[in-house]
Image (cartoon, rainbow, N blue to C red; front, side):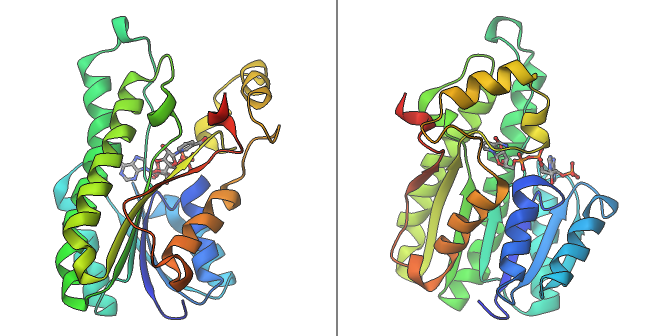
Length: 245
Ligand code: NAP
């Protein structure tokens, strides 16, 4: 992966930062996007310490112009883009009967819309290169549902159709598109849960522990590597057995 060029969204924290650092440890060039440059400062240091090169990109990924500008900056700086990891995501939890249209739309616009805008923006340069690796970060709840997360589950389930269709459209150009669907991973997103809720969740996991961002990053790296090159249009669950029931 030395000198390969990757764009990772949601790179300021959690799973996105772990992916950025993992790729950097292989000598990759990593462009990381978050809502502000300030939020990316720690990731920039970690990527450089791990041996990679970092490009900081800021913007709101729910807006199409953010994706176009981010991919444009990567192309201008590095002349191409070998991999996209669409990881930025948000939750706005609430029971369906009380969920506002705004909470539904924001979650869909960020998690699903953001991935669509990014995938569209990398399609042309990757087709020209006749090579590309795309990983969309979904969630196990897209397959099993979760009370209080109808918006989030709908958005993440949409990624499955997006990835499968894109895999069929782009396969002949050497581009793979997959979804990595994490289970319960210890990050800022899940730290909002009470200790009791976290304990109840851990009990449902076959491996009896929450995942780490690094557990997810290793699988993402595999799909981006030559060894993962014959996998496309798939949803790969990284959930410690949570979905087994
Ligand atoms: P996190 O710690 O909450 O980090 C979210 C990241 O997304 C941050 O880098 C944030 O940037 C960025 N982001 C949020 N909204 C954005 C926007 N509109 N534009 C640009 N960037 C935005 O989340 P995480 O737990 O690492 O989750 C990463 C991905 O994994 C998400 O897609 C999430 O749905 C998925 N996932 C997580 C879990 C879990 O248990 N943690 C489980 C399944 C799936 P700022 O720092 O600038 O806000």
